[in-house]
Image (cartoon, rainbow, N blue to C red; front, side, top):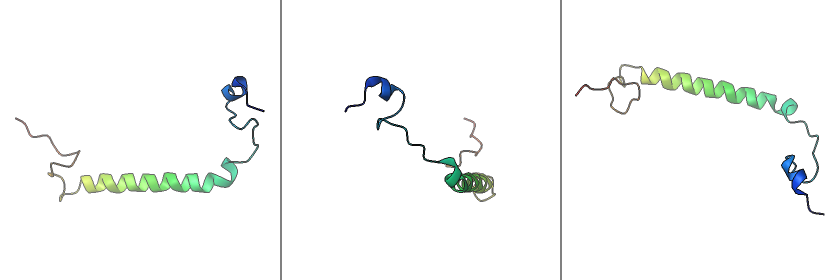
Length: 67
């Protein structure tokens, strides 16, 4: 039996919904991912503001040279 257009419009590609828990067992991984992303962003910002890379032309936070 092929899924009808109405069923596919409801978001069920397999013809029925699976009541599998997603958030409950996966929340530690989502939380860890957010913590890691925050840490990488903080480290990258700190490196861009360091004296060694402050005037590097590849630095997106470097001051633009006036023409």
